[in-house]
Figure (cartoon, rainbow, N blue to C red):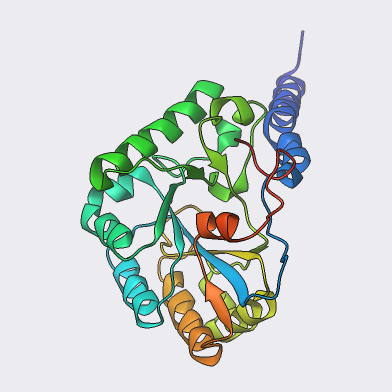
Amino acid sequence: MIHEPHLLRTILLMIVSVTAFYGIIPTLVMRPMFFRGCRSVDGRKEQVCLTFDDGPNAIYTIRLLELLKKYHVRATFFVVGERAEENAGLLKRMAADGHLIGIHHYRHLSNWFLTPYGTRKQCEKAADTVEAITGARPVYYRPPWGHINLFLPLEAHSFRVVLWSAILGDWRIKLGKERLEQRLFHHLKDGAVICLHDDGENLGADNDAPENTIEALEQILKKTTGQYQFVTIDEMYQNRSARVSYKHLIH
């Protein structure tokens, strides 16, 4: 007779093993295959790509869009489909202001806990939502939390998967705007793809954290006016001979 504690340990071990094989190990192994930044090839002004995840948010995204417009910055937004539906006007504003819209998922769910079909469904539904609002189908996809599962290369094959060269922890309000500003400044370099957030309503995030993000970013944009060219992901690819190959980007 199997004792209950032994059975429980066996079940937990199986869950951990499956999760590791299906999600954690593929994430560690495959992450280097995805785009993590571009290499400069000439003497042009340094190019930086600001990216924002998890929105749109009715409170913070509109303020962020106003800030980016003020400093003539184009950025890339990886939106959550259900939030895009709730804030369709903000998506239209993003497109009108020249920003690039990519997808996260329809809901903010980790690929570690989605079946292969679930990953494909989340991507397609999010893309359908953005296309219905803006008239343009997204090309770029960033997995929530950067989590990759074993079958993501097959299930997300119609999208270009983009990670980051720097993710700064701006989803936690305790980081503070001063430290966030320091991290932002440290990672500003040619070819950088910086991951920030314009929504704080997801698991592990703080609702008011985007306040720090907006304030820190405004200070950075003030201090670096004219030093960098802030571009979208596709502009960075088009404007230089980037290391965009299967090694860094799945097509």
